[in-house]
Image 1: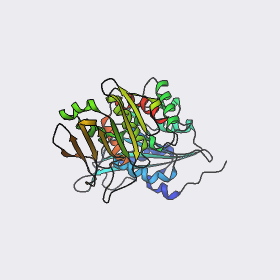
Image 2: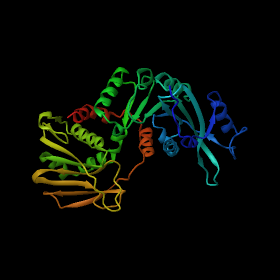
Image 3: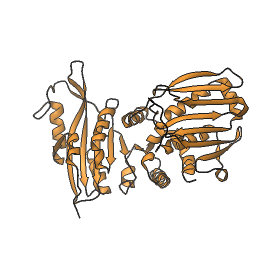
Image 4: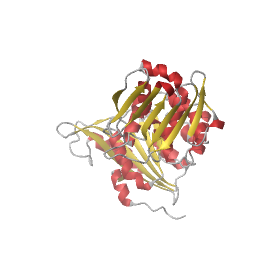
Length: 374
């Protein structure tokens, strides 16, 4: 079997390479100020509230992931375990350690979190599982962030030990099959772990804006004349638009009319509003100076004779959406709503900080799966 080819320059961002058996000793030297520790070791505190395992099979993403871990540890203290798995090659393990530290006003390192990184060649499910479990920090919760397609490494002896599982369905080439596999794993585990899709998390600002729209009593009354939602999404982020459509259906107690729906136009039925449609459209046009908020560019809510409500940038600064109420029973008005583009680190940190059972996403998942297979 050929040895996997790794770009050594990508591995330089992982810190100090050490033998696997020396990882704990190297971390102890760092935090105790022993030989090999960085300058100004006195007063450094180690912070860890959870274990965050990050798994990837993309060797080109190592530097990006290290920068992402460093960014998110500013908000969430954890032991980060980065697993770079290369299924090809002869079985071998290399390891690195480093710390991400906060600086005091005088530039001194005060609070640090550790990152332990592994390059696994000839990686299989057993090697990945044993590497992660052998290097967890005490009995702290285990959050597993999987990047890319689910592979054979995602098996029962791994996911049965997880507390939370983070993934990004926008990276999946066959999301229908992947969601089916994930749902089966959740069921098999007895719902022992909570799932978080970054594609769903990206839609959070829009979901919040839509909920805020109907705080208005006139808009809430006009909801009885609902005809349609039009969702514009950023290229490659169709899954976020489908998540929003599934969430809307759940909030309105609607069921999908499959025979009346098509690839990107879905018809839902409710007892109160009757039928309404949700259209998802890719919008590749970017206005000058515009930076879209995560994955969704805008939503228009058509309320028949009662008017319409729109949410979008419209050339505004990227950190805001403009909400427009154009309702027959009230004067037209506008309001700015905060919405900034967020990095992967922002999204993961939001999940780690919020915690909870993520029931809204779980409730919307069956409808999402229906939309994906149309």
